[in-house]
Image (cartoon, rainbow, N blue to C red; front, side):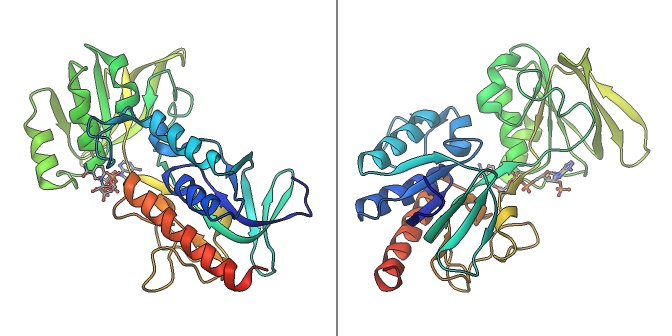
Length: 315
Ligand code: NAP
């Protein structure tokens, strides 16, 4: 695409929100351009079975679901290009979306950039991430830890869910939390704490993830927040489940975000921003529901709003 052509609508992100917005704007003959970031298909591609997306009574593989959405969007003329947007200029019309190698111009924009797993940042985490024992997805990687001991870091619903899922494979699951009780919902917390394979390690923070020649995890070094004593849990896998960080940085400012970095839409709207013709959808703007189907719903709503806005202002 040349720098000078102006798109009707540019959708940033290829998760459930972005692809649903693409299907709707493509069917409205708006010839949408979708910009793909570093994880095409978004978080669902790292999930195995999706059992709660309506319309699939027997569940569907997360990767397959995203392939289906993409195929559906392509069928109506959606175009896809790789571009990682690093900053924007919304003061002018058309809106400017700046990537490393070019600037994309658009009359309307739907930002559906999702959220990324939050990491602890301790030594060893980065080095041992991805195939070496550090992961953020039990459903993706749990089966690799059959009959091994693993640790899950975190105290929320994600951590409890990951720990429970891992009991299917692992011999023992340490659930390492920096407090003395879980933040997870009561039902999940009770399930996790009463499971015979799960051992809660309270008041403990990770200090380092240790590895054999940095090739495979050999242990999780933790420190007690009460006594400052350090110890090493002899685990082969470390599952980081300490929440998510919304991918909103390139857009804020000018767009508003809350204290956790999630887009703050205009009052009374889930998807409208203070910039006319610019919308947000999915996990980058939703820290409450964070479901594939709610992201798809927001993508649909953003597409309809963009379509209306273009009909009024977009000539
Ligand atoms: P969360 O509720 O924000 O919990 C994050 C956990 O990680 C907290 O326990 C937090 O500790 C801990 N943590 C944060 N930063 C840390 C750090 N640097 N080092 C060590 N620990 C750290 O995130 P979540 O569990 O991903 O859940 C997010 C939302 O999705 C919630 O609303 C949740 O209910 C929902 N969810 C629901 C389900 C379900 O219903 N099946 C499943 C997953 C998620 P503190 O407690 O000290 O803050």
